Amino acid sequence: MKHILFVMTLCAAGLSAAELKLGKPLTTKEPVSVERIYAEPDKYVGKTVAVKGKIVEVCQMMGCWMNLVDSASGKMIRIKVNDGEIEFPKNGAGKQAIAEGTLTKIELSKERAIAEAKHEADEMGRSFDPKSVKGPVTRYQIKGIGAVVLD
Image (cartoon, rainbow, N blue to C red):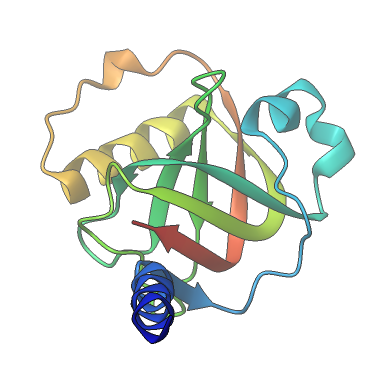
């Protein structure tokens, strides 16, 4: 019996060690799917939401943003923090995460969208073609306050 309890304790310790908690503790009881946010964005803008998804990309300069993809719909949302507030793990791509923060709506002119896309391409070491940006862009992202990265 002592052996079983020891093994269970080791397993529990291993599970908690597999979580990386960043920023403030999560307060939302249940994550909202990225698909649901995009289906009714005005319902969530300005409100605190939590989303769960697979990390597909992280800022390689400061770790100040990460993109999460919803496994069911394939839709993506960016979690953005101010530089230095939270540093998302730069090797986090492929891991699951739950992130919480305020949903914001960002409307960009074509010129501003091009400038932001170029900046991101520079950060990530990718080539960029300004012609790839079509017209003004409306984007939704979460101003992150906390996250849990699951291994």
